Amino acid sequence: MGSNSSTQKHMKIFKIRTLKGDGKYGIGCRNLNELLEKGCKKFKLPLNSARVCLYDDGTELSDEYLRNLPDNTELVLLAAEQTWEGFVTDIDRFLNAFYSRQTDVTEAARKLLSDEQAPQRRKILVDFIQNLNENISAENREDDNLWFEAFWAFFSLLGLEPRYKNKSSYMRSSCESRIRSYMKEVQSSATTIDPAVRDEYKKLAETMCDELRAVKYNGCYFDRTEEKTGRLCTAEGWFSCQGPFDMDECGSKHSINPYSNRESRILFSTWNLDHRIEKKRTVLPRLTEALTERNGRQINWKYFFNLLFTLENLKLVHIACHKKTSHHLACDDSMIYVKRKPARRIKR
Image (cartoon, rainbow, N blue to C red; front, side, top):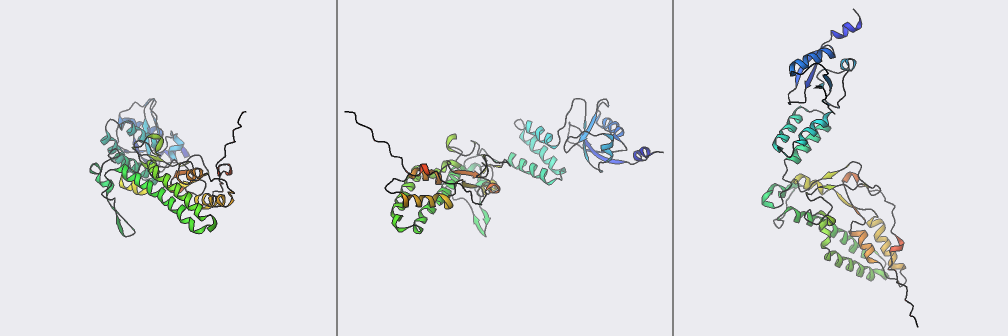
């Protein structure tokens, strides 16, 4: 007998399922035709036009392809007009059911997770299940007390103070704290500059501090209850990474909802409000130079204020997108001093 006959004697076992139901069954076969016949009989599907594809990526199988697959490969049996695009189809199936019966969706995801071995796909499912079961819409402490619970860090128990009655108040305070730290850096730099301009520097710093108090330290950026134009998140609390300083967007599509659970709240603290034009390397040194070189001109403190404390120069970035190398971006020299209005000529 030829090689084709010897090939058909080799029995392989595959795990096969259909689009209906979650059950998988082991079927032994020597070739594609035998697999189709046994599969269609098991699942009571018409043999005519039936097809088999890989569960992972939806690749439709030929007899030769089947022979090269290892035992226990997961397959999907399709009837006429049915399609399968791989693992994402399972996600899509229970996403479509999300708004009707969330408990069923969660259970379907858990079943997929119990059988899944690939680390990346396991992570997708774990994150999905976690987000489905979180109390994202809850705002007040009594409605989601777990969100406010303490956690261990550096051998200390860190929790949220009782004064935070809801999630938005804490998130706003968290943003204010970051902006305050930038203001402290501005103020502390006064001790390192030329004494000849130190008093002027302190006056400008105080003016900026007054402005920050007036805008409540821009805490609105993290507050989901703020107006859309004032916040960095959606109304549900989702934040998206804006990408590295030298890119228009995040190529990895990082996103997080710190309002969803305690773990996400803690992880969000690793995200950065990154200065595109760098604070220490560029903005503050240029402000000091401007004071030294002003020659009677008035410093445009509002320009420096925006660079230091507002979204004009700040980008919210995932820690992986936070490039700590020199940005090599300069201040706009045309904006450093207040432009004097030309004197109006008086007609006689």
